[in-house]
Amino acid sequence: SAVISQKPSRDICQRGTSLTIQCQVDSQVTMMFWYRQQPGQSLTLIATANQGSEATYESGFVIDKFPISRPNLTFSTLTVSNMSPEDSSIYLCSVVVDSGANVLTFGAGSRLTVL
Amino acid sequence: QKEVEQDPGPLSVPEGAIVSLNCTYSNSAFQYFMWYRQYSRKGPELLMYTYSSGNKEDGRFTAQVDKSSKYISLFIRDSQPSDSATYLCAMRLTGGGNKLTFGTGTQLKVEL
Image (cartoon, each protein chain N blue to C red):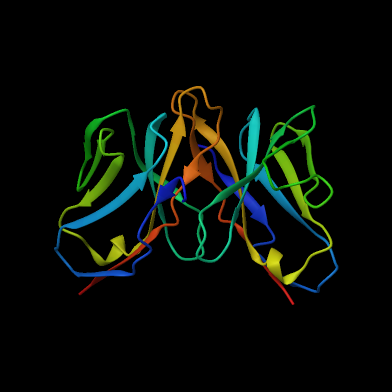
């Protein structure tokens, strides 16, 4: 199965700043997914990142707040813009490893704390 | 009402116990059902998945789906301290793209 590396693993950020999270996969994948895991909440899909096209955002998430890049088939970035304490969360990158059931594998996550 | 409901726990059991973890859901169109395990400061890792109704067994783990009741379960036999983690259920529609709908997770602690 794919191995996913995320950077940074954790960070403490100031209100109003932006932070970019990187996701590197050890094999080429068509789609990459960005999830958010807030304390006490379920994992929520932010967007799907496709190589060569605009990311597809889920309801409640917008490109201005969470711009995504997908320059090639092994790499993606998610930026959390103009952060507020409500953005404190774990952000996870994932890819499909079983195309039949669309089973996902996840990176270890990036834990952001916004002060 | 959330689409997927899962008791957050924490659930504490002695080593060797049989553990039952459960989720209920409201969307009868869900067809793929998955269980992920998440250790502290790690990403979720897939334990098992099933399609439609029925049981599936893998070692000490058994996944069960009852679509008539919209209820899924994960049983862990002979639980070990290494099973201490948060268990997330997830489900997907057939033809629903790649979007998974997750429960909030149940925190399990297996004590010596």
